[in-house]
Image (cartoon, rainbow, N blue to C red):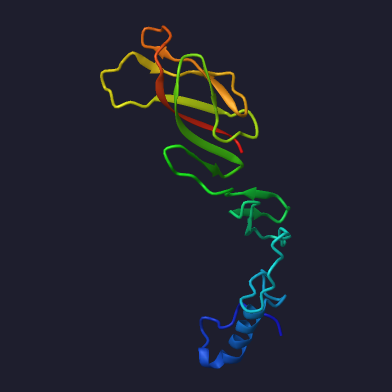
Length: 187
């Protein structure tokens, strides 16, 4: 016998179809080849070794987790073509300064630091490539301090960038300022 998705039919009484229903449940529980997808074995699961990524099944998308070198869980997805997408990486840090991994291999990091005009600033965590976006804004509770407008950044590198402090009148800001930076780039 094989798995029969038509049992019981809408017009059948369950008491008349007990035997085929029981067989269908057995096929589901044991992951019988006649039931697709075969990966739904609820009883006799064979765990994959932790060091190997699972192979794809036809017409399936598999999610799996494994630990990185630091013991943090990482989540991946793999389609039937063998393409892998990483959903998480490392432990997120959600403090005033921190970072998190974004789907698709991106890292978002934010941090505060006091800078002067024309200062080189180090990223807390180096990016895998030159970041796409770096933005800075003044961190102050002083609502009368209108001389600082923006912190354009230039000379991006994977581990640092240069900050130029510009006042509202267009002149350089020569006083040190506490800034909050945000950056997005390749992890």
